[in-house]
Amino acid sequence: MAGDIVVLGDLVTPSRVIPNGSMTIRGGKIVDVADGSDTSTRPGTSPHNGASSGASDGAFYGDGVTVIDARGKCVFPGTVDAHVHCYSELAEGFTYATAAAAVGGVTTIVEMPYDADKPVVDAARFEEKRAMLDGTVHVDVAMLGTIRKVDGVREIPAIVEAGACGFKVSMFETHATRFPRITGNDLLEAFELIAAAGLTVDVHAEDGEIIMAAVEKMRATGRHDPLAHGQSRPPIAESASTVLALELASVAGTQLHVCHASLPRVIDLVSMYKDQGYPVSVETCPHYLVLSEDDVERLGGYSKINPPLRDADAVEGLWERLVDGSIDIVSSDHAPWLAEKKQSPVIFDNSSGAPGVETLTPLLLHHGVVSGRLSMLDAARVLAETPAKRFGLEGQKGVLAQGADADFFIWDPAGQTVLRGEELHSKAQWTPYEGAQLRGRIESTYVRGTCVARDGDVAGAPGWGRFVGPRTSR
Image (cartoon, rainbow, N blue to C red; front, side, top):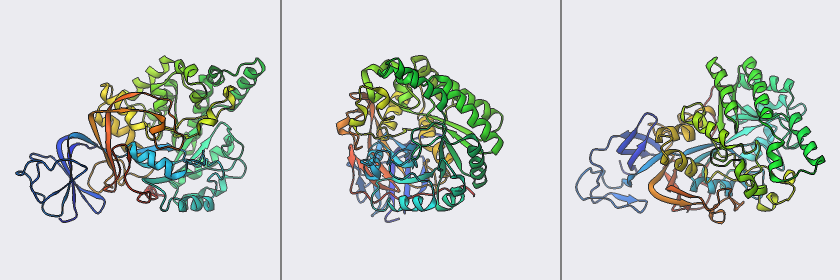
């Protein structure tokens, strides 16, 4: 049919990789995914993406059909980054963050609610932030809400109605207004309301009392070196807080999602509750899979992340649990602080977190797929399929399947990617992986069948991306 798009390549579907397959797109949706016996094209087709149209004999798609020829390359479902902070650093915003996302193969972001100026704690703020998407984003955006430290629970139903795909709460207080600690009583009430809405609750699980006592002790003894950060956030602070969140969720019947787990022990705790039938999940991030506390002194303030980087044994333990399927999602926890906020000689005075939405997918494909630890199906599951399901976007996002949005990226396994902060698209302009040489290269990214990034840069002005809400029953 005129106006159709046909994508040729090795298609990574939920059940199998289809070598030399073909995917047909119409009106921004996938209408067919098929085996390809002969995927050459004839004159009269319109090859795209700078690729050859192939031989003059073979499959004929007809005049007006655009052919994206990725033969010899891999076509992955677009990554759904389940953990992005566009406005923790106001200089970043939607446009820079979604440009970085597009170049990195991310076609949908789940936006966190902890904005530096106005956290998303009520429906009015949710609607205001949703309106900020119009004309400013390169990829699609789903949004979380949160609650105020005091009397915040009552706003939950209105935020649900406004279109939130879930909520984020913290058990550690970074800031009393922007990123507060929510008490156990309020957490239980919030979990019950969110469970009734059929949505997921993200939790930042770290015990503030353990941590703040340790920080005070460090400061009192003159310790403010980079290693002091991790030593002030011992494993028990993360695992004990995780247990409390899991117990509250088990009573409330909540779909709980434990964010940015840095410890194998935390994964095991979540697995125990899964085995008991509770709808819980857990994510980790590339910095916990690629970096360790051995990198802290080298990186200085740039290494400060919550929870902290752990030892080499923890890194290996996370990989074991990613390989065996115990880890549900790998996300970036994109925190795009400007470099000036990461350069204090007093580690505790630096902002916590690192930019990562552009490097998430290349890092996992290199360290997971190229290394042989993960299959392409594994990578697609933790980067795209599961995050889409967890946040009510299934059927729309995260898979190459009939009826889904035509969100995908083309990855050349023979290519190479070198990570340099000044070349990345976040306003942060730095990366903890500076100089890393990765096998594989993301050539182009498509959202609803339209190219939004190609050859390491955005394709066109922002505005193609749009808000997406959950399909989860309320």
